[in-house]
Length: 84
Image (tube, rainbow, N blue to C red):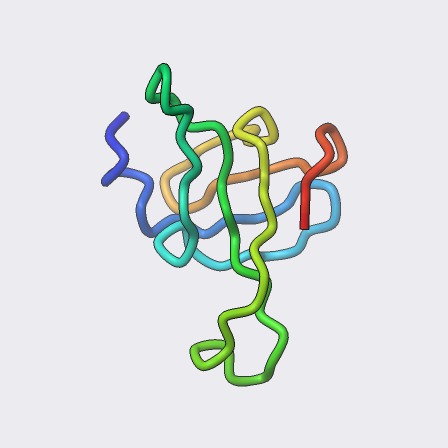
């Protein structure tokens, strides 16, 4: 699968049903030695007008991704600790 194939999929957490926006709004953390994806960095918006607020990033380990479907990416943060 190419990175461009997963770009605009909605990210949903299986453990609590929260929606984290689209992968296009997120960033990827790569392992520099092997080039593999280590984690998703998902913005945590604090304000009502998200596009003005840079906020903090939540780091979701790649192992937390359970399924990449046609329209969504399902993650499960209960299985792996994530860092706010």
